[in-house]
Amino acid sequence: MEAATYCDITEHAYQNYELAVREPKLSILVKIAEFYEVSLDYLTGMTDEPKPYPRNAPNE
Image (cartoon, rainbow, N blue to C red; front, side, top):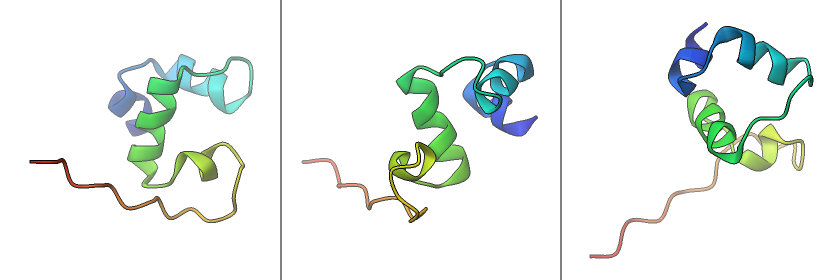
């Protein structure tokens, strides 16, 4: 499974998150959101809008 590989976790761990057997750490949630190109709010059910917020450019 590509999402599990991207998150550097096992497929079994990812399946546990999908089945709500376990809850992922925030760092894993961020990677899942990046993989699917959605916001954390969408991923966690806080909004129906999947589009992620624009990222701020690093200050130079």
